[in-house]
Image (cartoon, rainbow over all chains, first blue to last red; front, side):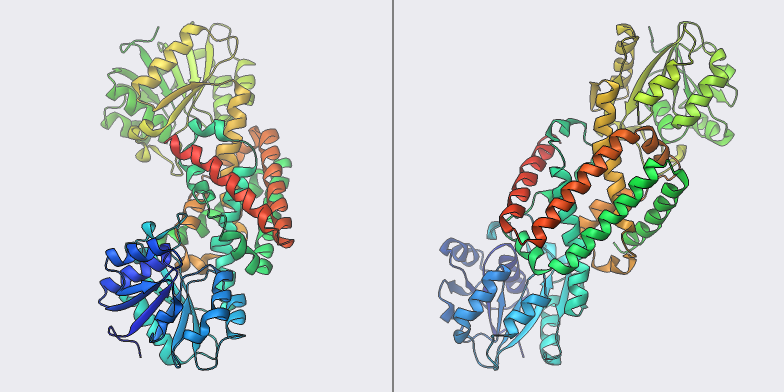
Length: 284
Length: 284
């Protein structure tokens, strides 16, 4: 069981790792240990009193009851391969990765039997990088998704739920890896693909002065972390390709209606989109 | 020349017509005349003191030096056909229509020789309908586009520019009809098509609770006026079809990179979209 006196390790002090350290330390967890290859990120977290101690050496984690990887997906898999020997027997390992099926398979496929991996996804990413952009306050508007498998113990799920509550996430949900990856493909990955492709459709920068809110809103996420997203897309390739194809199909259907000057067809499409979109305002 | 004592007619007291009446009356124009088939809209404008008088009878416009149509495009063309006889000789006619090539052609093709039409587009539409949503304050964040032809007099352009300044539009630009329609196709029409098609790609309403800001931002405009937009799309069909096709092509290219797991290709696309999007933040 994790308590506020437990040693909790955070590996990777970027935006999310930093925010975890901040949120947990502000919630009264006194023994947060921060690991990062970049000494200045560790220093930043120390100065903010977000961590009790830290450094680049993974063996600092040897007494941790919980270790949370806040690394990019591929780096996380490599890190477990190289450093899992430092983890405490009986400890819990969690993560923040934005895709789940492949990650769960790759981590569980190599992890020691005496360490349990419970995948989690705090949906609070940002387009900026580095601990200087960490801001635990953003968790209050964000969803925390726990993605257990049959191998996870109820107690571990309760532990991560309590931790997410202490970090003040707005909602906490439990989804299967497939449900999670389908949802992320549509709500997050497809929207990022759309924004990137819209900006790349033509050289539109001369139009900036005429732009209203709708174009700005739609393309905000076209400012994107180009290191992380291609990796996440590839790890969710099957679902994302399906969603892009379905969206292209919908565009083609609309374009055919436009070509045929089918006012009533377009009108029905708009009535449907208006009705569906209304659900997303109710939930705010 | 239009002065604050000139009679100015506004035909169609909806969101934009109401906002024009409000903005002009607040700027000290004392003789605004409002025309609407709906008596309650006229009454609303009178009670707010946005108009000096009004009603449903177009002949109330007979002394106006300027008449601005705030009607939907097709209705505007019909209105001119039926009622242009009431317009004062030597007066100026303007509009708020969101597409320009076809409108200019259809209006000039039938308008009396002693009345001048100068097309304008205040880019301040809303997803709501009716004068109760009129709000001249929104003009301060909006662009006003003047779309003259070679037939327009310099004096008329100056008149509409002065009027837009008095209504406190953020920027005032002059574009040709083709430039305007190309810009509107990409920045406004394509983005509305994208939002509508994204909402219609699948029944996603069960996902509302997981939604973050990016999906909400991207689909805000999927709540759309289904009466007006199909008409605007059809009147700009050539450009809009080109833009939808170019966007689909870009999506397909990205999807091919995803299929091939071409990380570097996707990375370059994201670097380009990030760089282009940055221009749109500078301009705010």
